[in-house]
Length: 378
Image (cartoon, rainbow, N blue to C red):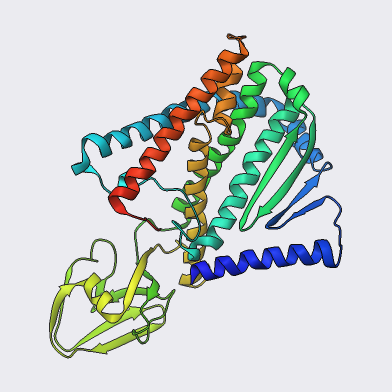
């Protein structure tokens, strides 16, 4: 079903593009249409960056220098984690577990379609702040921005800044390093802020389970309902595999009220098995808000937005600092090396060598993940 929806969305994108472009021949100022997306460019939005710089130039400069140090720290951390993880697959396979899984985030393949709304919000926040920080630091250093903009490709939003290439090329190594590390610095700050907000808003212990999927046979419980207890036993990760004994009936407290199920014979089995026998096939943990601000379903949706935002923000911050040719980590390394090493061929060789090494680590980890666990979906 997910693949049908994704294909239908792609077909809709292409149909809309053909109608607007060739049938109605409509043109939008500052908007470039593509078969599966569009780009919105604006030169006036540069003023926003200039205003931000004018308010706190010293703070931004200090933060951008801190970003360089954190950038190299995240780069070393990423290489270490990928290397150590690969070593576990190769030399200690008996210790391999879910903590060693490395997968690309591909909606409909490794990511279930139900996560898409939360991911889109998270990606929007992460990418806009990432590119925004690049733009702020560039303006701080006096580098002209040709334009800024937003884009949507198929399902995925993003942002970009377009500096004057000649001015950027002439900039000092430190300026280039500041700009390169700025995006990941913003992502790391967003990730930490969201984690702190989650700790402040939500109680860090589960108060139940959210039903994500059923086989259609369960009655009285629907997708997105929260299950609080079964026969008086609170439902959480500690009790999920605890044996529940019942002779006549099961009494389940949910967000829709109390549901009672008559038993044909006495049971004594783990709570997870009981839920599965009722037709509940997939669940997630429910973390309630400290102060109620809506239904349990609303709280769960907000929690998932926060969870995906911190996950994507921190991972993009770290992954982006890998010294891979098309990532900011490469610009960070090369910008500092070029002040010591004037040979362009040597710089290119270093750049391609680091890119090959990092791509090998990523692909190898993904390959062993697939070999060990098969196609992992979250």
